[in-house]
Length: 179
View (cartoon, rainbow, N blue to C red):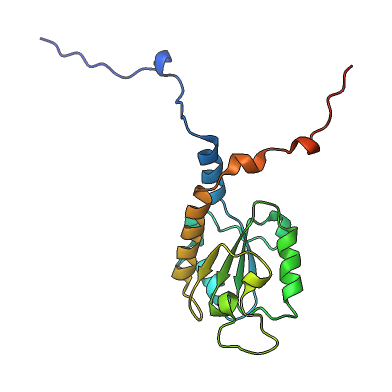
């Protein structure tokens, strides 16, 4: 008996794949896997931030390799280092210029709590001027710690209610004109 082999041919019944998901899940997946950081390297933690982008640690694996030095193109601000009161208005201005949705990572002990500096010139935590989503501990924190903080931020973004943020308020909608 001759054995017949059936090769898979193009089947019109299975044409195209369909994926069913919630809009929140799709939007959040896109947002969490394409975060563009705005590096605010203010002190020694900035060296560790730069190291996280190197080939050894490869922040690109998490979709955050596109460091943007323009706040209008960035999604997440990474405050790495000591924030002084003199620098605080500039940090806040850059945060305000970022498009929504935006997130903040406080990298290191100085950005989180002022670190070892208890003086009149050092702000005791960047959370006094901008809302912080993830704190990365250490002095200075290793690049792996920043990558862990980025993973925690991705997990947080994945659970947000994105569709509600996309809705335009009725007061901002243009009135319908009759032609």
